[in-house]
Length: 210
Image (tube, rainbow, N blue to C red; front, side, top):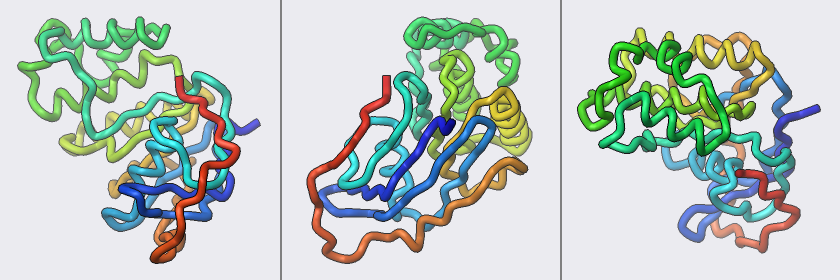
């Protein structure tokens, strides 16, 4: 059974359609990489799948409480330490595994350091470590490797691979090759919306982001 099924989806930004006619499914253990030029609508599509906005048309099928979304912002509280930030998010999502998350993203030695004192790359790693404490099987990721050096990119790619190996799934917009053998690539360029395409009322939208 698919964790996520998208049917004939159209999304809009700023009152204008960006992409339309998009369909795909993600089963446990699968990853889908979204590609396309900047401004095409990858972020808008991810936000729609994550439940942060409604589609223009089409349908999104998934169960409740399956999505963990990582956007451009790291979602950190500056005054809290790295460990306290992860503990906060674990409580929000009802998850666990704070120490494991710190170790997986090479943050154990920084666990007691306030997030405000971390470098940009360290903050990014901490923001991504949040995924590991959510307990959510579907990771929706928007350019997750921004600010990461090559070693950290490789480390995060392994974290994603492990997640897939444990029955999770990932929908990722990235220009970086994460070397995930399980991943398919979907180029959204052919789905660019027609100029002047009307924005209809949403139909059949299953809001499933908790």
